[in-house]
Structure formats: C-alpha cells, structure tokens
Length: 217
Image 1 (spheres, one colour):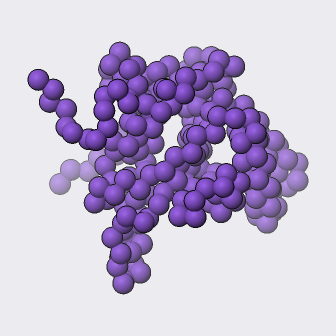
Image 2: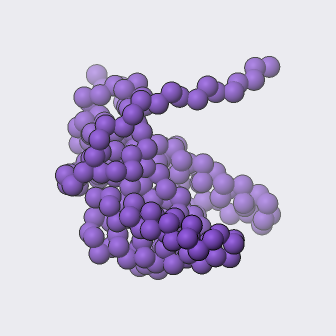
C-alpha cells in the first residue's frame, strides 16, 4: 500500500536517485560545491529536483516559487555580465577599493560561468492573501520567502541524491530587476536566488555541522 500523500506530483517526476539514498545520507552529503567538472548534468535530474522543490510547504498552499533553468552558455554569460555590472556599481558606492572590486567581480563571473547549470529561483505573490494593512501584507510576503528556503533545500537534497553538487547564491536578491530583464522573465517574477549545479570537480571535504542553540521552556 502506498502511504505517500497525494501531492499532485507523480513519483515518475521525481529523480529515481531519491530511492537509492537515505535522507540521512542526503542531508549529510549536501555541501556547497563551487568547482565543477565538465560532465554534463542530466536535464531529467534537474527537472526531478525542481519537482522535489515543489513538495515544500507554502503559505495557504500557494506554491509561490518559480524556476528558470539556464543550461546554455549564452544565458549564463548574459546573466553574469548584467548582474556583474550592478555588483561593481554597488561595491564602488560602498567604498570597496578598486583592486578588491575587480577581484570579487572576476571571481563571481568565473563562478557563474563555470557551473554547467544555473537554476534561478523567483517568487510570485499573485496567489497570496491580500490585506489593507501594509505591515500584515509584508508578513504575508515573508511567509513566501520562508517557503522558498524549504523549496531550495528540497531541490539541493534531490541534486545531492543524484550525485550533483550545488551551491546557493543570493546575488539576484540584490538586483532582482536586472536579473529579470536579463532573462526576459514575467513581470510578476521576483528573482531571489541562484542554485549553481554540476558534478563536483573533487569530492567535497567533510564538514562538522554547527551545534544548534536550543532553549527549552
């Protein structure tokens, strides 16, 4: 008997790799990978990871997440260049020395251009509840932001299960209009994050998880 809940997403849409790895192994194996090999990533695995992302909880079941997969060098290069201009402008305004600005900018371009796959994650507030109170409306939007974190965690765990490394970058959060225009995305999409994905160039080193701070009452 299949006791899994009815999510509207078929098991066939999820990565078959999810059946070959335990949740504990996926959680322990996920690392921030910044150097990737030239091995291509199976598009079906990426689609399965996005399907896993869509199993995350969301406010009122609104599923506010939107995804744009950048699998071509042209799209990745254009996004990197457009956001890079904003990055240089912002660093100059912050008083970052020129040499350091150049170093950070070149590193960012190299990282974005070197990943076989970029997945831009955005939010749409169209299905959220609307309130006349601006403060309450802001909290409604914050719930969507919270849910995006859950969706991205699902996505990266699914990639890990398929042997694909990833790293979470928040650059679009600082220049959402630039990212949206560079990729010609719908007007209601608000870019929030980039997941860089690919097969790791080397096994990621072990990591000691931080100890949680817990208060019990």
